[in-house]
Amino acid sequence: MTSKNIAVLGAGSWGTALAMVLAENGHQVTLWTHNPEQAHEIQTTGKNDHYLPDLVLPKNIIATNDMALALDQADLINIVVPTKAIRQVASQVVTILQEKNVHELPVIMHAAKGLEQSTHLRISEILTEVFQPIGQARVVVLSGPSHAEEVVKHDITTITAASIDDEACHLVQEVFMNDYFRVYTNPDIIGVELAGSLKNIIALGAGALVGAGYGDNAKAALITRGLAEITRLGVAMGADPLTFMGLSAVGDLIVTATSIHSRNWRAGQQVGQGQAVKDVEDHMGMVVEGFATAVSAYELAQEEGVDMPITQAIYKVIQGESSIQDVITALMARERKGELQFEDDLKDIF
Image (cartoon, rainbow, N blue to C red; front, side, top):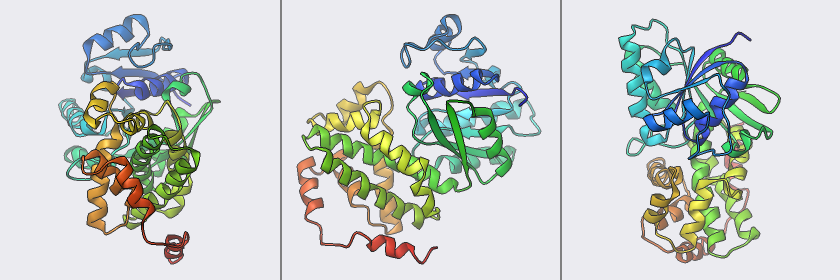
């Protein structure tokens, strides 16, 4: 395909890895960071030592802390910052595009996973809202089982590009595809975003179980029942239940809830070993999306009237309302149910 100009906003581990994939595919990539020292390091040495110390980036990546430069003539914009920074970064993009008097918006991608605090909006909803003054944003979500540490080693990776805009979705698929990085498309943006966000909560729980001394039986139970409640909330909010059998749900849940590469799993493990949530957050060095998402998901489940006992348990631990052992005891003492009870409810959907 014709080479594209692509701006990647956010130079953490995942933003850097995605910039590498795009550059290796022959696209002109500008990697933006708010940190001028980090931009200088990447530009002069080709390395992002804090996040991916073993990676030497392709030479066709330009690093900058000047967002206007990053957005200049961009055909696609990929926003890869923590959820709490999405609205601010997107607002900066809108201001710059307004100043440039852009008549046609670039395709807007995001590769973040979370829900906005207080509003409980999905990230595509935030982007649509922020971009509304200058036009209808063509938003594509990138999500799925993918550790940056493995992508940069060319380990085989498959993810999902989701959008209600079929043309934009296939463009994103095309710019990323190569022999180690495969992209599938999915029109269910609601399900893909919710699955990618909510699996971080279950990953916290899986790590906490390990930290508290439990084994594979407990972890498998948590992951399986966690998927059931993620699906319940997703379907209640209009998602396709089949999405929760795909890469952005089962796939991402497996990789995030079982791997030492997962910051949410590591954070949960430390909480399970007795460390305070605030101390874990302060020392992780990267944003642990699962902590904030657990609060948002708990509140959202209350609003939607959806039963999410595991999410509620993790919320109570994060808020300091209960100990890990107390919530485990409460979960195991819940009233008896049939495993297919929820699945029977889904039969009316198909």
